[in-house]
Length: 59
Image (cartoon, rainbow, N blue to C red):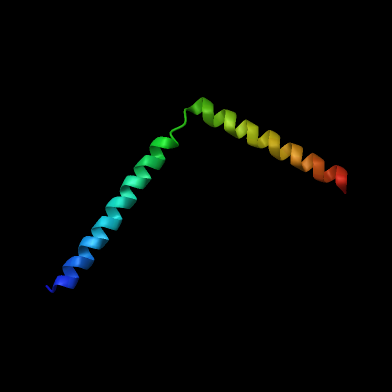
């Protein structure tokens, strides 16, 4: 193999390894408990309800 092929494969492996590290860190950061998930969903539903009420009163 030519040196540029080896360099390309090494670069590809480095990018893949970096992606794996980033994904693992993101999963660890977003590891919510079931109660936190429920709280976030309830907050989003309440926020959506408020925004639909506001848009209905404007019309």
